Amino acid sequence: MAIPSRVQQVLEDWNVKYTLANKTPLYVSSAVFTMQGMTENAAQICVLEDDIGQVQVIFPATSLLDLNALYAATARQLSPVKPEEINKLKQRLQVTELPALPQLTGLDTYVDEALLGQNEISLHLGESEWLQVPQNDFQTLISSSRIGHYTAEIPHSRLPGSQWVQTDIVQINRAVKNFTERRIRQRLEETLDMPPLPETAQQIISLRMDPNAETEQLSRIVERDPGLAAQVISWANSPYYGMSGGISSVKDAVVRVLGFDLVINLALGLALGRTLEVPKQGPTGYTPFWTQSVYTAALMSELVRAMPVKSRPSQGMAYLSGLLNNFGYLILAHVFPPHFRLVNRHVDANPHINRYFIEQHLLGISREQISSCLLKQWGLPEDVCTAIRYQNEPAYAEQHHQLARMLFIVQRMLRTKGIGGGPETEMPLELMASIQMDEAKALAGLERVIEAEEALQAMARQLSQGG
Figure 1 (tube, rainbow, N blue to C red):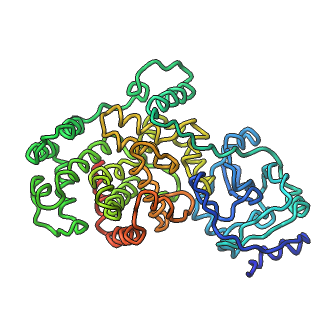
Figure 2: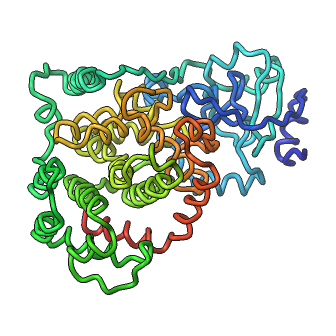
Figure 3: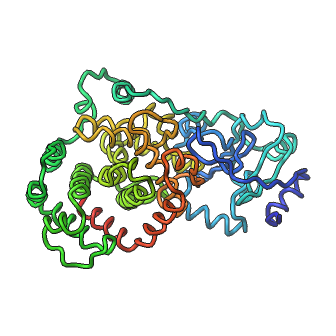
């Protein structure tokens, strides 16, 4: 294992004792994210900036960097440096990862006091390579740094069970009350100050509840909305569904290509997605909203085929769950703009943590809680609402857990291909087995989705323009 020359120079100049270690990724299912060699003594580094200049913060990799605490200590509104600037810094220093060595960059350094309680500090060099530095040598390295409390504990998942709607509404109201400093008495729809549910979506929801619904009825509803009709027809003509033209009507799209179940759920997802504007600014490095939604929906649909026929969910429901999985992102941006921006800054500052826990820390709720409750109020199917609510909590094992676990699996499968956002994760094979998902078929489905990149990207662009 070769230590980068600039790192080696710092270690020699400061007479630091060290050992080298090779740590394989550690998958912690209960924590819902993968920590690559990250134990309590692992040090994370984050470079931030404001109008004054740049600083760096060194903190435990098992904690969340709290920018509010940093502001209280510095009176500076610091934001993470853009990834492209970090990449330039890495190139200049000739390292693949920035290890938590203050002297390497020469920036003003803040060190979280929690690291001082460890006997040994682990510094990440890249991949599975780590430097182990004794505490006394680490304190020598940070002798010119400012020590303080700059982190927060990562929130733990709380499973409210079958009464999740009532529990989440209470938490949402409490969170909104904290944000606005006024008492909340309105119902959830009023509390969230959401725009009214589009008429097209209302009609589709009513049709979904009709056991005798027919293709003609669905076609008429979709055709009344020219934008929606154009998207459904375009979907049907997409090479992803094996067509390269020839579909010119919504009815043909339903009968010849997509099927009633997929079209009604696709149309509903598109109608709801157009309710709110996609924010122009999001977390750095995250896949754009509609691209992530389209890929998630496509892979959800593929994974249905990797499960036994008798126990698999409907393909339409799986597709709808995937398309709406991140609907809470739009709600956060619409209802709580300042808090949305605060969440994004913390997500950028904590790339090692799933943003689900960052929201829990900052807001006391997650976007999944907000969106699932609102979708429930709007009359969407119970299994879709539950899947969205529990998609980041694989321990949930009550009613409709199957779709929720599928969403958990899909997001992590896509992450291995660079789609989505957050820390790199392992493939959740045990979770696949728990819902009788065939691993080989699932991986083959993932490859089919990736191979359809051109068609799926075209779909996402169309949605972005029409959203």
